[in-house]
Image (cartoon, rainbow, N blue to C red; front, side):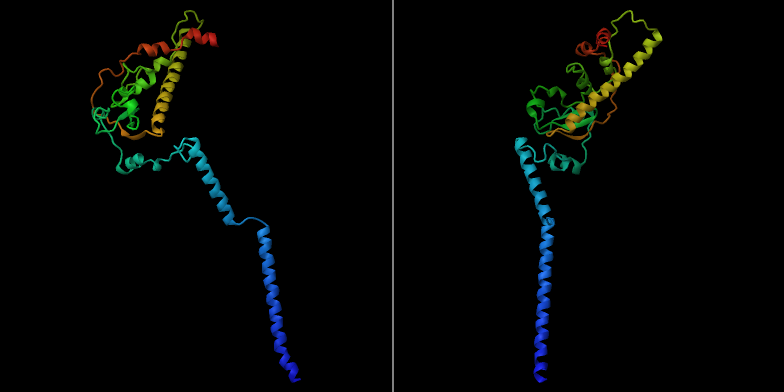
Length: 252
């Protein structure tokens, strides 16, 4: 009896070891099963990071080292834009804006479209002194952007510019009444004004979204009256661009 009593603890210890071994094997099988059922979260992160790096590298190569994001340049990645954001907009009157035409090397080069002032100093070969588009700088020449008359229309006055989109009446007998002609004219003028707005928006967007240029502020009204406002007529270049009624009938 005493021998049996002495052997019982040994049997109990052996049972415990067997139980622990079974539990360990069960945990190992469960871990193996989990690994065989899919990839881990860490693997997913690694795959995503690899794809992002590959995309950035390909973008850098295709865009000739200009962009890691396929041409997308958030405003906060451009120091001049961030500086303008931190310091606030630069609002200038027309007379103040005229100083930023590139003649003073200590000042940046500005031009304005539809009242928005843009810094184009990054391209002095074009907008600086002697540049092909230097006449746009130091002023708001929105009308010239619409009509293409770079000598006569260097002004922000758009009144009458819509006329270049209104057809020339060169058909004598159309078979319509004066009332019908008046209604058609009013409709075409509305469409022409919309065309002017779209042209202005396109040019304003060009400078605002350009990778080198950025908006710095707005043009302020200095109270100076433009004696020619509302009295300007279309320049010769704009007149030649007007559609003709006869050509419109032929196309229809």
